[in-house]
Image 1: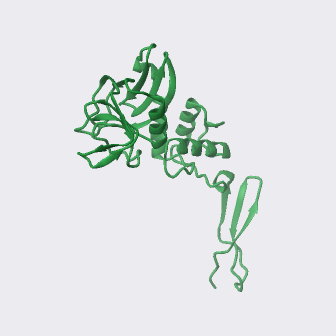
Image 2: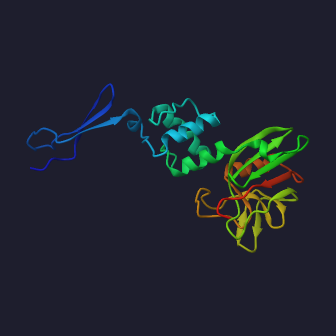
Image 3: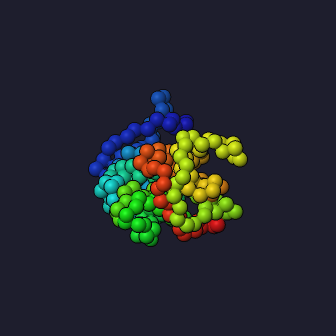
Length: 240
């Protein structure tokens, strides 16, 4: 006699106890397996390979809630990781500490804003090629916290140096690549800041030199910056 897929769930002090039970009309028998699902899993958050590392990076970054750096998923950890994933466009924002979440958190936590050496008298957009991050300094202080970017791929490295934005458009159409570049802010040659047209976290992708941004960041910076803003590009994107 086959056992049906119906399950009986009992909430216990340690989590959710799930035991198989027979389908209607089947002879009663002792369940062959008992699976204990933790509260975190019951809240639809699984423990990822990089759980403890991500917990540590998010605690360092701050602003994502209370985390326990112990490598064990909890309701608080789950909420914090989901918030982080949503902020930086990581899909799915499921709370799982996978390789993309780990990589983004590591890059952001490793970004040292002082390395930009921005002028205290100017607003400066800092593009850290090494960490693939962007932030804005104003009056010697962080005005816009580090966010993620994707810069030039191999053969199309984003040029390092200090520049000024000299053209803005929304959108700017690229005749060469046949694509609209929204929230466009050009700062050298054909290179500028603009909204990405693809999933930013595809590690194998790269731009043709431009500084690709998440939609929310591109919109925000386009609204806050103006023509003539200083852009400082430094470091080197890994693999280029």
